[in-house]
Figure (cartoon, one colour):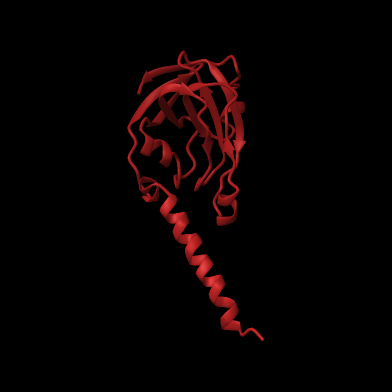
Length: 163
């Protein structure tokens, strides 16, 4: 007959191993609770936005993790050196997002609305990755509802003021 301790030991060992592997696979920059991002200004159609700029791999990995919900006049712009199919996920997010992918000329190539966050351990293991339909050079993340509130469509245009 198996004792309680004999049953709990393998479970405890498995939990420690899984937790350690999970922590080791997170990039070190994303473990920090505060990361400084340069700021800039963009416009989507005629709507000005103050944006945090994610223009390096550590900043892109970190994204909006652990941040509080943004006002509708703020967002984060991911800037890539080369056009590509850049996917994003909602790891450690605190609020839902609208996401807009733009090509090098500022044309919308993909839109995702109301993407939910992944906050719990169970959600993280199945956290969805959002993949665009076409290659992009920029991705804008804004608080969920921004797209509908401002009538953003596939015909909308990104204008970079300063990034």
